[in-house]
Each structure stands twice: as C-alpha cells, then as structure tokens.
Image (tube, rainbow, N blue to C red; front, side, top):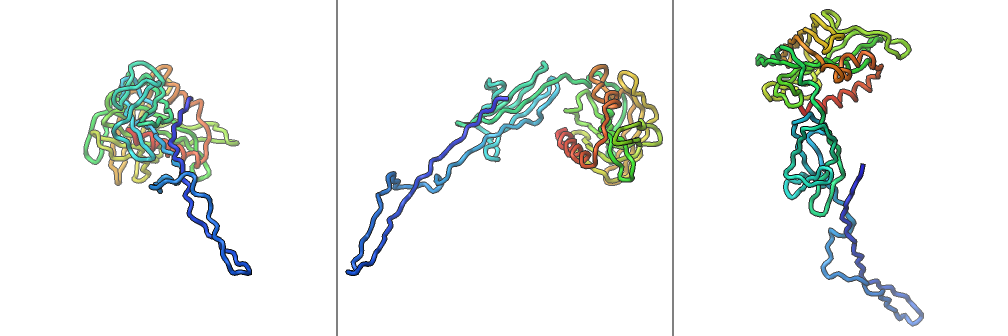
Length: 316
C-alpha cells in the first residue's frame, strides 16, 4: 500500500551569548576574549521553534468494512485532536464532497485526508454484498420488560478453549436482529454459550452441537433495543438457560428453534425459529464451515478474541 507522509520541520535557531575569559599574568593584567558574533542573529527569537516538530494527520472510518448501500463516516485528527473543518477526504486519490462514502457495487478503496499542507496515510475500506438479505425467521427479544420482534439470526462457533476444569468446550455466539442488516439494525442481541468438546494431543476429536440439555450460558456480548445500547461489552454476570429445541446444521441454510433466558442485572428473553446462517457460499464462513475449521486455542487467545469482538460489536 502506498504511504504518503508529510511533515513540518521547523529549523531551530542557535542563540549565542558573550563569553568572557580572564587570565592572570605577572602584570595582573586581564584580557577579554569575545567570540564571533552570532552568524544568524534573530532579534525576535521564537522559543517554540527551538526543536523540530512533526504533525500527524490521521484519517479514521466509522467502520472499515460494510455492506452495499451502507454509509461509512470519515473523520480526521491532527496530533490526536479532532479536525472538524477544512479537511478534504480522498477515495482512491479523488477528492469527495463531505465526509461520508457508500457504494452499490463490491469494492475496496484507499481513503486519505488532506488538511492544509498535511496528508494522512491511507486506510483501506471494503464494501461487500450483504449475505443476510435472505436470512428469514421469526422471534422476539425482551430486555427488562421491553419486547421487539426479530426476523434474522446467526449462530457462530468461535473456537475450542479450555474450560478451567481440565476439559474443553466450544464457544458459540447466537446473534439475533430485526431487519436484514445486522450492521445497522436498531434491535440486536448476542449471547454466548459453551458445549462440551473432546480434545486429545491438542487436537479436536469431537464436540456437542447445541441441544436441549448441554448448553452452558457464558455471557451477553451485546444488546441494543429500539436503538438504545444496553450492553456494549462482554457481560458474564447473571444466570442463563440456553435451550435448542431443534438444530439442523446440514440444511441450507442452517435452521434452529431455540430459547435463551437470562436473569440478573440484564433480564433478557431471546427466542427464535428459522434460518441461523446465510445460504450457499456465504454459509461456509459460519456454522457448517466452522464444523471443519475449529481450532484448539488457549485462554489467552480467548481474551484476545473477546477484545476483538467487543470492538466489533461496540460499533453496532
């Protein structure tokens, strides 16, 4: 990727004063030695110009990947401070009007910003087809007494991790949303749970799929209802029950009928029946593909994944 870095270099001024050296001889006379005058005198020195300074302009995006038709908002900072006017944004080196971009075709773009005589480094932004357009189901999500309808869901197997009791589990996340775009919906819920796994010599041998009895609630990953964020980072408190009355990961798309209830600080009821994956090729990334690609990871890896998920889900 091309990188263009502009910096402002301020030349420092060397200010010299007078120097007196006295030597004593037998005649007790003294000689004053005066150095050459300042070769570049400045009657009005600016103390702020003593050291070279580099200013950094940074461009950021509300998200770096989006679905066709989504809007991405750009912003810029100068040495960490927001720049709200006088900034011009560029997409593939072509200036745009305003600070938002969208696309109705699949595309990858290089975005930069210019402010005065500074240019930022590039960031990469991608627009892709929405794989959830045809995901269809019926459900509901209740948070502390407020209920909304859901019509889309995704079940994702993250990976295999130690359970702190000498065994291993698969960590799953069940997502649900209203509308056909989980990135921009006003109602969104994500709950994680574990199922037992068998590991030998650090290799996954087998694991249990979600069912009516063996799912163990782990956390609320995110909760947004009527556009109001209720949970924006992993919450492991409360008591939860996760029940899958039906689960078919061999169908295309995968389907399930489940109910999840959580009590405590966040009282949640999340029920759904229908598709839990995109169809055909997009599905390979999720339920069916994970069946063949799950890896045994450490708890340290799980923490890193958790932080990445929090960052991703906090932008919902």
